[in-house]
Image (cartoon, rainbow, N blue to C red; front, side, top):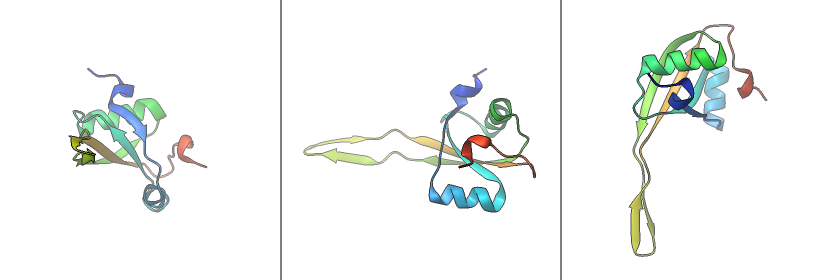
Length: 95
């Protein structure tokens, strides 16, 4: 079984995620590509000591980038939007 910190890679803090956070009490994280919704929910509950209601995941394809005549591809990655129980919050996101 994976450790919680291997599943949750980093929080995503943008204008769009901040508006989602304020409107629906949902937080956005960059997560491991191999993690499923159940593992993500358990990892968030263990790390931040909150109750997770729902997890939505989005798989992002890596972009093809070019540097002169050389081209390559960025890695694929996964994003998770985690909805918390009413009254719960994650203090690290508050500014």
